Image (cartoon, rainbow over all chains, first blue to last red; front, side):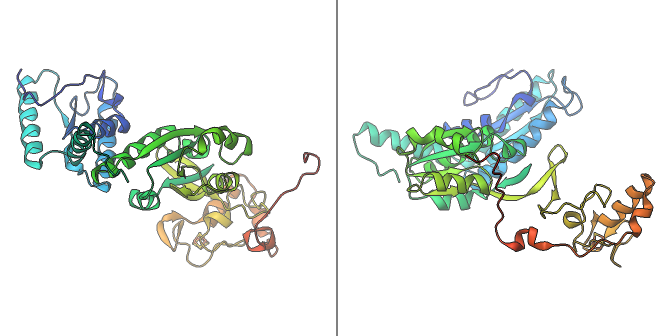
Length: 126
Length: 222
Ligand code: SF4
């Protein structure tokens, strides 16, 4: 199963474990995009884990929109555990979509602040 | 419990846009239960605010603290030793907590992160509804345990009005008519005769219209 190098997989026992704060922190650390991959709806081992994840993704999208990061950088997909080809296809799709959107403004800002620090420039922080 | 919800982020950002270091304080009581201002919501808001600042290439330092209660002096004392290190406090408590915080730390700007809405409870997960308006003179003993002050749009004490239609209130067909609920429950309790007892004119001075209220218990006072 192949997927673009840009994607870092973080394993969780069930997407029901993914909370809003986890998604937020990924963006805060500079992720350009994040997607949650759960089992097919109706096939969650814990019954509703993926449905709860879906709602949390929706909620987080709204926050990202409100702060101007763009909710479209976050998505939820449902893929059967056995469906490797679909996993690869979604990874490729998401990679292309995020590349088209360009780097996250957070990552760009973090890089600028970091570079300024390296150069010893005292950045005005507020 | 007191039910609240987070203000739009834009409004909160507007309060703090000129600061670099803020203290973000949650409350472990009502607003934790209604998912508005507990530890989890503090973390989410802190992250959102930091990102909103970063987007403008500014850094915001946010210290996250969640107190047992913000409507209690002793718990507010817990942050005394760190308050001075910050330029402002953003409180995720209800309006009571925000005001107690502002009274306690006179020289600190204190901003609310929530809109405090009502006294109510969770009808189901994720759905909260108003049940009490704190009128100061409870009528639930005469109304089969259903509050007409809160749940009747007209606060009728001897309802229903002519707008009650098939059990719904005329203001909105999704709102049950409080007086229909009262009559149904009186019937179920075999107490429909109580409905004939007209309620006297209510003393509204015990309510908010009498000005801000206070209770003094001399047996407890120090
Ligand atoms: S319809 Fe019922 S709840 Fe609505 S205003 Fe009239 S009495 Fe009150």
